Length: 610
Image (cartoon, rainbow, N blue to C red; front, side):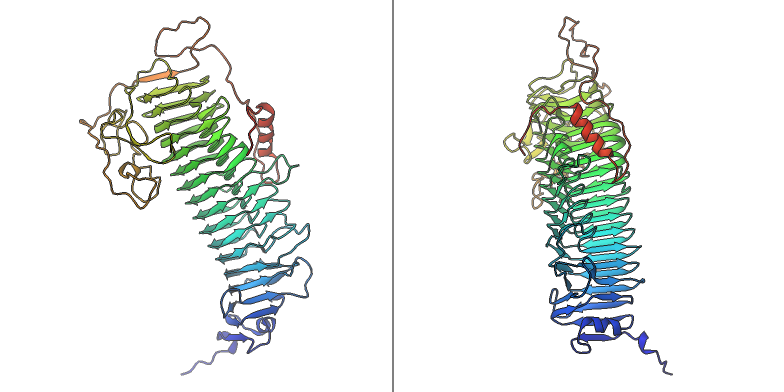
């Protein structure tokens, strides 16, 4: 028996030219589910699509170009509504200097190899220079290319989405400009955002998020590059200008994996700035050569909690405070397997942490970070509580550690070749336990740590401080000299390759732990033996060797006998006064209040050209 179906239920393939003389006629005549194959040419619209369709450039991406010769300024050439599902395959849009490419409302669009040529010019062109997504819509871009700047855009130089679902896989966003707002290339509000294998290059925003801005959204970024983006173009806006590469506000649960922030610039958070974003995970991400004249050269985090940073690299970043990492006002920060190298700042060359309860930095390397003021490679300030365990601090210029009205628990760590005092301006409390000291310009008094000898690192030198072999030699006095146990249960080694997390470091991300990798900056080389761990008993030492330092050595005739505790005058913490405020979202001045307060209270120690 044959079942006769109505014609509208059988998908058809329509051709332009061929079945129809132009694309608009084909769309109007098509039934839901039809495929329209468009041959090479420029085809006049606009298109209003309210049914399920596929439009395919049959001769390849960019050969079929849609335009709209009769359309008011600022309108989109392709408009998809009414819960339609539309696929654009290889279709390009010509804006004729007047039009957007795509408007999606309460519908779903999947666009492959989409590009906009000759976009809008002029001023005051609202949000979303190329694409606007709204009303619960879904947009998926596969290998898009947006490189022609749209003029006069507010938020979202190329893409603006509200209350929608946006997925971007591959492609390039270059030269986008948020003329008066945020998100030089992409801005999402109250949306779900997934971006994979995509590059944001040379985009800029007047306020926040030179490449990308997300407010109140679910965000997952994987294998994304942010290169040469800039936030804070408006010289008259003292409240904004954060997140040169990306800015996230209240994006709880965000996941950022294998990203690279390179050469981005902002007033704060040269690479990225994350504000009021809890339950955050960032893994295997590089912050290289980013800059901020105020705080957070590489990464800034503010008013956030439950933050996990795993396997991050901060190298060559610069700021006034927190050259690599700046985190203030939150709790429960975990940093593991990180490299902080050759970052510069007045305060906190590698990292600056304040008003933070429960910060843990483990199995990390701080090397050749430099401070111009009175700070250190790691600054803890304003009641911060920081545990620095199983770390290398090597060749830092200035001090290694500063506790300014804060607490630092230093354990099982190597402090060596510091071009300055190991501890400086310690008005808080530094507790040191089973650490190693060598070649510092000035060690603190009263040390009872077990190792004061050449650590015998295998291949590290100040000539190339960010590369080389940081591992201790098999004969190093660091082996089995720590407190607690290593990952195999034997007595802990001192330094970044010891303790329970001894496999956390993998700088070249080749899957081979750094302690087993003789070339941990070359993923092609990993065939080498680890230094032996010869713990005899597998039990930790019983003597903790703990010394607490609560201030500078006295200079006014106080008792200076070696008691194991450095005596101090009763002085107030030096540094930044407290600034209290609440985060108020993208339209508020919360972060701006912080920046203004910092500028007012802390004069720059040294003016630097950037």
